[in-house]
Length: 263
Image 1: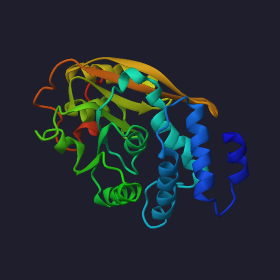
Image 2 (image 1 turned 135 degrees about the horizontal axis):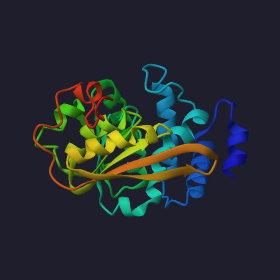
Image 3 (image 1 turned 30 degrees about the vertical axis):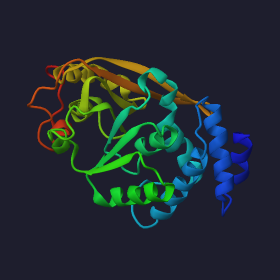
């Protein structure tokens, strides 16, 4: 059904929200995820708002349904198939959330989650607040800050079961941005593509410096895109992050932790 609907609506305007809802439902079912009542409609509405707001501000390169349904929406929620990572009532902080991926789709598919969306640009959070109000979501909070600053703030430091990021930075920098938010026993979860293998060794060194353990790699697949090499890189928090981290804004990306000698 999803394949047929995709072909029918691809390139056709206007696409009704009913069509979008049916397509989201079909694609979510193909992922074998539990789908709460109303979630496909919420995702369809979110996509419509994203496409509308993207004409006025740069949220994502191409906000069309064809471009976003798999690459952004379904890619955000596909990791929910690893149920052990996401127990009931998980608290999540999405660092550098941008247009809301993956945090907002996770909040829609798992209304039991408490999700914090963190971004350094207020205009993005203004968009996300509008989406949250339109969808009548009650499990989302917003933080306007640089990750390095919020990670040193006692209000957010080591407060979350999961800290996640998608398409934000290389793995060593991500570890420094994410692990300070994670409670001991929780997980930093990085959404990554094919470059993950090249970043893994330095990322694991950084993880250990920050209180994390060995970095595990879990593949993530979408039924309609078997050629996509997406994965999760996961570091479980073993001990508190040293007070020196995260370093001041900009340093995690400019001078990454964990870099091999003479690299």
